[in-house]
Image (cartoon, rainbow, N blue to C red; front, top):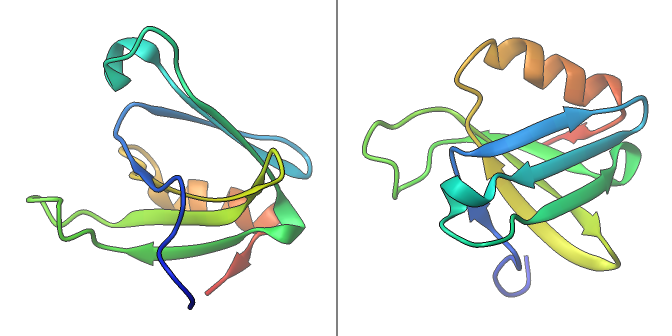
Length: 100
């Protein structure tokens, strides 16, 4: 790739909402340590997903890196599904996300 990812968020406190063709990620403010949370909307078919461990994660969990365009800007968000990670992966595939 060229350059580093923009908007790379590796947060446990991310709420993932998967619609019929879109993926919405929202950080809850109390977890992100901010007054307001952040929000990303990705169009499934224009989005890639990849499983990875993050160097910064001492527990070496399997994260899902979601990359695409949100609000007209390139964004990459890392989520760690604590429950049913396989179901989350399958749901992302169903809305058209392309696995890498």
